[in-house]
Length: 322
Image 1 (cartoon, rainbow, N blue to C red):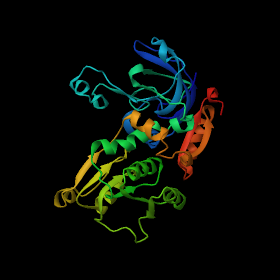
Image 2: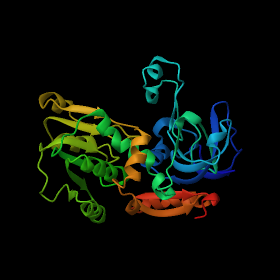
Image 3: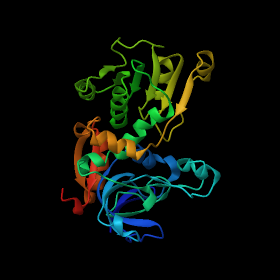
């Protein structure tokens, strides 16, 4: 099968089609999304070698549990051991022996086929098209913030970053009735936020005051984002850290102590919540789609993401018909 393989250099390769083991399903990938984490892996983040990609929608083509065969699915990306203390406490996403699809010790979704445990699968409702279903993983990550902390109506929230994840986070918190301001760099992306009834501004336009937000979500994908978030958060406020990157972030730790700031790391989320948000139309993703490339043009797609101020770029297999 064809796959985008990274071994220090990204290349389109012919690789062996995977075979499902006990409790696993073989999936034919329809669409897969390029994520900021994929770009960071190319810089050395996580030390990953193998097939990239963790945002996808596809169909089950082989599984011992026959009820899954033919189902259109998305899949949770953390594959835990199910036996350690963290797994038994319900924290399998943090299992020390876990693999992570396309990120750590498990081949990912930039391929014609992939394998995942059946317990990781979620059937996609018919009302959600493939182009929306591919957003389930990042939308689940956005919604995880509300699982980790209480955001009351009218809470002053800043979302730093007007990229794919930042705009999803902004919509989720807007649905929770927070008073959300997206702070970014691109007028057309901020206009998109405004079309949803969310305030959008640039950092240098004079509308944003330091120490004025109860919650600041850092989704810039940059090591400087945390420093900026700490400047904007109010005393006894919370900074939610969403970015992962290869470089090391530098910031003044005394700010955390003096202003009694809570620093909250936030990663993966609940797929069922994300599917429900999409099915109800509470989060809009159609305008986040920038371009779709065939899998065979994967290198061109990565170049496009790096060189163009775009949002979500997808890779389509021949099976998708796009």
